[in-house]
Every structure is written in C-alpha cells, then in structure tokens.
Image: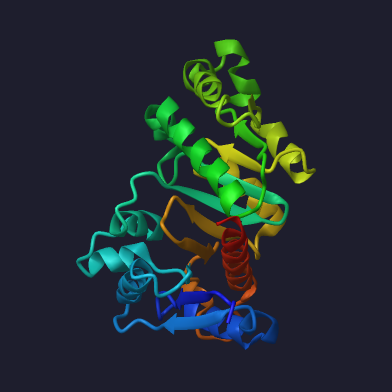
Length: 281
C-alpha cells in the first residue's frame, strides 16, 4: 500500500524504449519497487503517451514519471513543436524555473545551459541563470536526496577559471557575482572551480553536486563513470520525472540486444526520490 505509483511512457515505438521498459519490469527486483502504469503510444512518435501521462500527474493520479526516449525531429515533423521532454513538461505544467540534472555513479550534475551550440553559451549565460540553477539544485538535494546541507560546486567556464580575466571574463562578470549573491541562502556553494578539478572533487565525495555551465562540460565526465547507468532528472516540476540517459538507438532497436541498465536506474531513482520526498513532507 505504501509503494509509489510510477508512470512509464515507452517512448518512440521504433526505438529501444519499449524493449528496455519490458526488460526492466521483467526484473523482480524492479517490479516489486512500485505500482507501475505503462503508457504505450498510439502514434508512431510517442508524443501522445507523454500528453496522457501529464494529464494523470496533474490530477495527482501518480507520484512520478519515467520517460523512455523519443525522437524530437520525428515529433516536430508530425506537426508538434517539441524541444524535448524537459521543455515540454515544464510548459505543460506552467513551470517557469526548471533545470536538467544528470545522475550517475558518484556524480550529480546540473547543467546551467542545455542544448545550445557551444559558441552561444557565453552569450546566453547570466547571473540569473546560474542563481536559478543553484536554487533548483539545492532544493532537489534536500527534498529528493535527503542531503540537509548540500555542497554544490560551480564549474568555471574557462580554463583555469579565466585566470583573473586574462583568458575569459565570464567568471569575473557572472559566475563569481552569482555565487556571492546566493551564498547566504546556500552556504555550501563553492566556486568557481576549474573544470579539470571539480569532477574529481565530486567523485571523491567532496561535493554533493556539480553545476556545469554547458551540456558536454557536465555530461562528458558523468558518462565516463556511468555511461550505461546515467539518469536524467528534471528539476522544478510539480512531480518527479526521470529518464534513462540515452536516445532511441534505432540501429539496435527490435533486435533484443538493448541494455536496460539505464532504464532500471531511472526507475530506481524515481522510487528513491518518492520515498525520500514522503519522509521530508
């Protein structure tokens, strides 16, 4: 009776989503963690399943959502504007402040910017974005991971933290001022810390989470230690949402060889977050 209700959307039916979902739920250790409600799409893109899931979650019919991968290009070609699960779920729930946290092995990484070209990162990076990501990370670590006094490391954008402005001014102009503004409410925040040091610190337990300035800065190290077990968590939503950290993998779909490891981890993390959230409320 105390088991959470978890919705799973199986994603693009042409990809590995249905297969990894089935394999994960065939594992008795996974199947016994929660009450599962699996939504299989009726179209070829998987988008309608996401819409149904959101409706159920907004009406408090479930505790968490685990999403198998979809293809953004395919959904957009169907006539639906779709930037990705994260952006769609935020818009569907009127969530203005949200972020993407990747969890894998000993690392938790929140990205300040998401899917943007590297050459545009500096131009869209602001103090407000850094502060928002820090607040969302701090809140999630307390509410869903049971960490009372989170230690959050903020990654520098430039090598050697910009060397005082000699090889980049973003640290001086945005990152350091943002950290100073937020330190009173998040005393455990640290940085900026050079990208070639910060993940080593987190991996060895000196930080609870890392805030990376751009996508690959954070996901590269995380996938190095948890390539097949990474989990994407959307912060800021009114419900828990996790996802395996891989794509549709059309090249191996329907061959029975897809590894369900990341899906299993996404389910386990969703359940864990539900349990901790129930205790903290």
